Length: 115
Length: 114
Image (cartoon, rainbow over all chains, first blue to last red; front, side, top):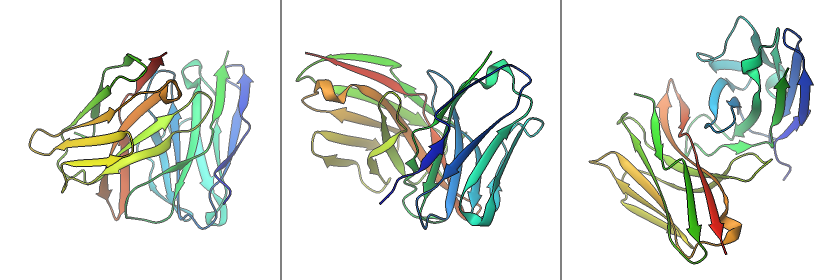
């Protein structure tokens, strides 16, 4: 079974530029998550999708971050304009359903450096 | 109330020793407590998990101890090996609006020295 795929793995941009990250979850997984992991910290949930609907985006900085999940499968996370404090690893995760044991399957992450 | 507090931040253990990582929570609605293991450059992966209706769960060298009254849970790694060197995150999950909401601790960087 293929895991969660993310790209790009690394991205370096100047502040005020824009960047987009892509995620392809495990086939059949209904729930998709984007987490931000700043160096030395635990993952922080940015947005959670159930199929193609948003169920939690309470911690997403909506003035600069946006995310969509087209057709309930792939997802993109965009940052525009980027700030220095956005330097982090952006982790995509998926899980099979809406409830249950809560196990998340993570991708390897996209590391963003903002200069 | 959604926080999960984790300690220590870092831990150095001799090969063969016991590694112990502790977590505490406040929200009594949490109903699933997983531990994730993360190697450098990789995403976190589920290691072991427990529900609050049991006090202990063991899988190989890894054991979760759960104290519901104290709202604390811990990960014990017996016979620690250099290959266990990684960052460990506790987490807690709660039903929320018909879905599961997962909150992570701040992580413990474990180094097992030969």
